[in-house]
Length: 179
Image 1 (cartoon, rainbow, N blue to C red):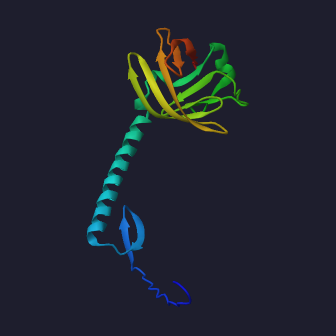
Image 2 (image 1 turned 180 degrees about the vertical axis):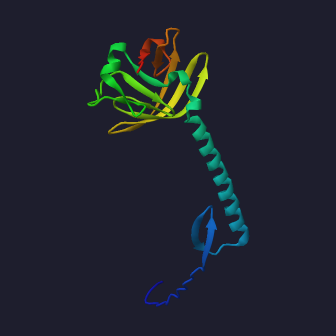
Image 3 (image 1 turned 90 degrees about the horizontal axis):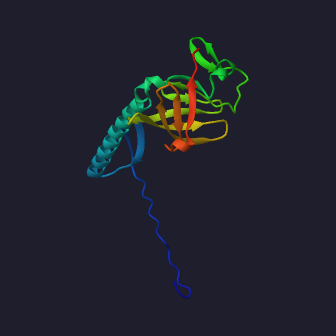
């Protein structure tokens, strides 16, 4: 526009028709789309739902006791003398005695999770090879959430040897508590 020319802009308001559809159990509201585009979107949602369900099933298997060696289940401490100080049985389950010593070297290995005095780790996967189990877990304490990996094996004396890296120099030996 230049020098005093006045133009009147014409605004066209286009309002798409609302389209309601149910995709993967959720109500979707959107604008009307050509049928070809909608079919493509439905195929993508169907494929994504199938992969999500498969991942859920895989995660359920990886986090179950089947992923952990049954010989790992139970209460463990750095020394047998600590067992009666740290653990008790309540309703058939092993629990930490109150007040919990947050700095104790101890663990309760359950089906699908590992409970330490200061955190709870949900096992996401476990794979065994050459007498050693690699455990991947998501751990949570009172202030953080982290992913952890540990390498665990049982020695001939029945002790658990675990390392965050698989390096024997960084390994910690723990004894099973007989409760």
